[in-house]
Image 1 (cartoon, rainbow, N blue to C red):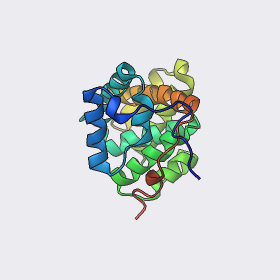
Image 2: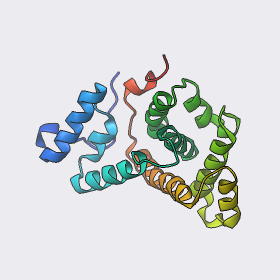
Image 3: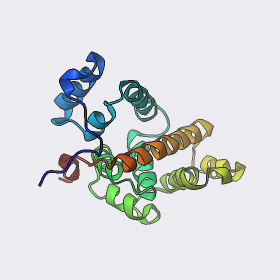
Length: 189
């Protein structure tokens, strides 16, 4: 049985602007498939460009947070937001980046019981606070981050990732975006 990738009709790849088509083709060449998020969002080119630019600025930057830790934030907050697409797709990326086939499932179920470091637990506590109760963030949260070696720039990164994926989760849920079957097996070997 085949399911649509979204409740919105995806665009025809050949009819997309050249820059977006090229970006999608590059992802296809690298991964062997086109993640449904690319096609689902490409139906609105200006928003696609803005989304992908901010995503890359947050997730691909150098800094005190590893790429795996950035994915931990996505999986944990996306699970709280009940975003199946992001939990499954970013869970696959996390398994690959962390070289750990268990971590994504642990985080999506209950990050407080996952096999993570104290630093990562504090990072995820802060991400969850931003995701669910940002109005409660206080200086004590920054003190807790500092106690495990995370500074103000790290706090900004954690908060920006949690906030960006809050928006992404809501759009994916509204669109009923379906995760590609390929994501389920990535990083499990």
